[in-house]
Amino acid sequence: MRTVRVISAGFLALLLLGSATAFAGGPTTVVATPNDELHGSGNADYFAWTFIRDGHPEIYIKIKPTSGSVTTINKRGRWLSGSMDQTESLLPYWRVTGKGSNRDMDIHVYDMAANDEAAVPPNVNTSKLEYFPAISGNQMTFVRAGASTQTLWLVTDRSTGAKIALTTLDTRRAVVANAPNLMGNWVTYAVCRRSGCEAYRYDIGLATTDKVPNPQEKYYFAPSADIAGNVYLERSGAACGSNAKLMKWTGTGNPSTFYSFASGHDMIGTSVYDDGAGSVTLYVDTLSCARANADIVSFSNP
Image 1 (spheres, rainbow, N blue to C red):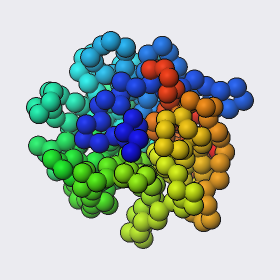
Image 2 (cartoon, rainbow, N blue to C red):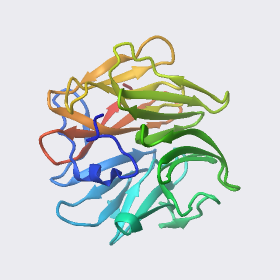
Image 3 (cartoon, rainbow, N blue to C red):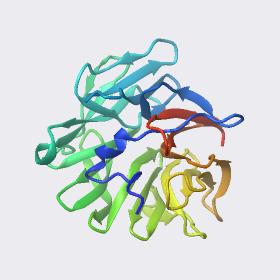
């Protein structure tokens, strides 16, 4: 299994790895510095991401309004951004505290307009590890990890905390790879086993799950969907930077390639901003397998 990009209960090691450069004629650079930027998400009014300064133990969340300057919402600690709501100013995130067996992870919500904390749905945070949150309207997804299990939860009502489990994995055999995404009627996620990685799309309205077709049995990572249910994901070989491509699946047939990474370049995660009027922006956390530097790029209407 390609543990270099698979995030399990011990996923923090991944955050020390890097991401890639922008490519001529390809994606547009969104954030790129000598440090690490990843977990990018945005809507019409805001863009947010996780920032890691080389050699520093803290992990920061940065926010940039469409018309405004960049702010950092935490001065210390290890805070990591989730996927923001498409129409409101709510950014879910998770905090990591402690180390080793005393490590804990809990989910929080930040109101970017009010510059203040907002309410977290009831019964989300427990004595287990909660991370990878995403908000869409009145719903939220997150992952909860215990000693040997991971569960991907869909909160169907943020005010009451009512939720259903979309998948539960025995982490001795499989893990949720990368951050799941939530967009309107769709939840997308990837699962990695020793035999490889597969991507899935859950239809909230129908309560059904589809596996993204993988005819060549490649590694599928980091799927995210737009409002129409089109899924954007990575397909690659077993090694980092091995024939990595960005794919689009419309829900029928096989996925098609819309971008190929240069050899030795790869990615960590994706997220989508869909304005609901036919314009889709795909954010991609790119990865250079030889360099420890993470950057965020975007594709318009891929």
